[in-house]
Amino acid sequence: MVGWIVAAVLFIGIVITWLANYVSAIAILKSNIVTPLVKHFRFKKLEKSAIKSDIEGHVNKTIRPIRRELPPGWLDPLSIQWVKEETTATFLSDDKIVMRVAPLDREQSNFVNALYLYLRTALFPRSRTILEETHFESTVLQFARRIIDDQDQGLLAAFEEEVLEPAVSRRGKIVEYLERLNNLDSRGLLTGMFIREIDFSARAIQFKKVRSDFGTEFSEVLNHLETFLAGLGQEDPLPEALWARSGVGGTYGLLLVANPIKAADDRVQGYVNRARDRAQSGVSRLYVFGGANQGPFVDKVIAAIRASVEKYKFVEEFTLHRDYRGSIGGKGALFELQSASAASQEAHSLSASDEANDVAKTAEPQGSDGPPT
View 1: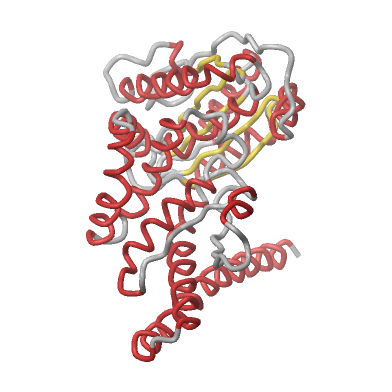
View 2: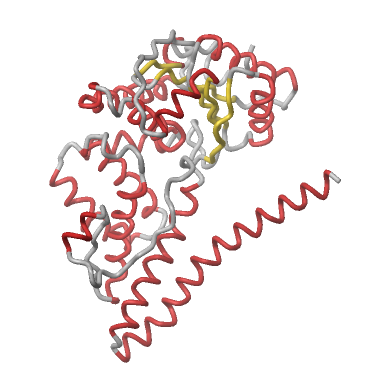
């Protein structure tokens, strides 16, 4: 019976993946068929259809891998509508993005601009108005640059000329943040942890007076994670204080699953003990990160924490672009204190919390790559 259930789940997963690929592929195929006809016969209606299919198909296909790294509900599929009856004023009042599309022979320009504008609407869907514009813009540009960098050099050149350089010219500080966010991204902490903490904290203080100074929180989270990464792999263990940080949205902590010789039960229990210690210390949100070559062991650790640490509620699992050592791949999971769930629900529903969470910092017993004790 169990075997049939597992087979059914695998089959459903395969069908969902196939359908997701199929929808984007159909849009691209439609564009490939219609575009030559448009270029030859110059039909305006067909031209609009070809442009729409080309942009939607390629953007949705491109963003699919990164969607698995982000919180649920982010990066909904792109949908393009041509402006017809609406005036500019009514269109903008609906909080919609207006994009001026180039002719068909400028597909690269259309793609990079559409991707950039799409990410501006899709990232931080419930907290973007709380972030400072420079911080938000820098994060969007880092996502766009990483996505485009995986494509081809022609697209990258178009992106740098038409999107990146104008943005940097408007706000010179973006250059600094781009470099710093890219460093986080190269070690898995941008999508794995940073954007989640920024989003959670922003929503937690939405109706508090500290909202006006949220840029400070953005910078302090960034500083903390940079310092944390700089200490990994050093001869001396990381200072205890670096394994957690208390901010405006509560306390977050990290748990790195090291690369054991074998996935023995006692090693799994060591990580469970650490998670339990963090819960006991009041760490509101615990992020568990595993390396690219540790998949089965990481799964065992996550499952054991879910089953054995009653104070932590499992929130989600996610994939990583790169792990904390910089290798391609990896996996992460987020746990939240049961006592913090109510506050989390308030933040998710854009309600205010009246009390600040002042919780003691917790520490990692050993160095980042050592086995648990």
